[in-house]
Length: 116
Length: 113
Image (cartoon, rainbow over all chains, first blue to last red; front, side, top):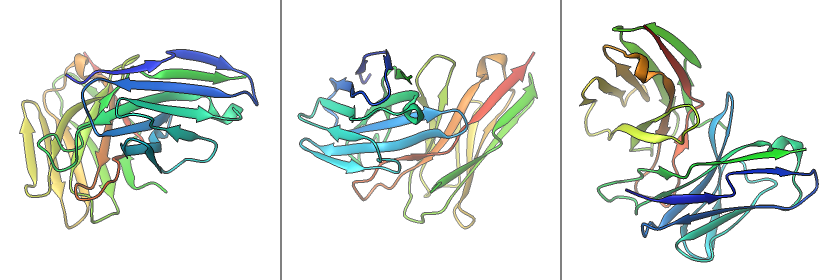
């Protein structure tokens, strides 16, 4: 089974501060994603990547940057954290599209971020 | 923009009843439709999925019904059990492009004994 590890598991940040959320996967997956979860909004796509050193914007990229320095690692960066970014953040990975496990996402445990 | 719409937001059924969760989508290029479930304090996990080559997919008590013409799909949970209480997310993705799955807003299901 896919192993996706997120760190930290929870974080309290101050408004205007910089926050980095990290994600590491050990299953040789090409695709990695960052979603945020808020009550009533489900899982909304922030950034994703299908190859190292390249990232793509999702549906709500404003205020977030992403970095994919290697196939295993995918980070989400909040340069200037704001109150509205308080949420649970999930990292996920999946195998190459079109394969047997087309787009089955394996999620990390999540990071609960509180911006005060 | 909400590419995948899900209803109802919450649903309560009695044990033994069939729970029906609904989703619709806009993009005709979507060709893979999974359902994920999430138990409190846990991360989402794949429950069942369908491709539009068929209009029905069964796995035990869980069945997806798919209507390509209307761009709708639903999850039916037969003989609902209290252990099925969770939040269910539908999703849609496109297999022939370097794109990412989009999720619905979720349905919180409560099964009362």
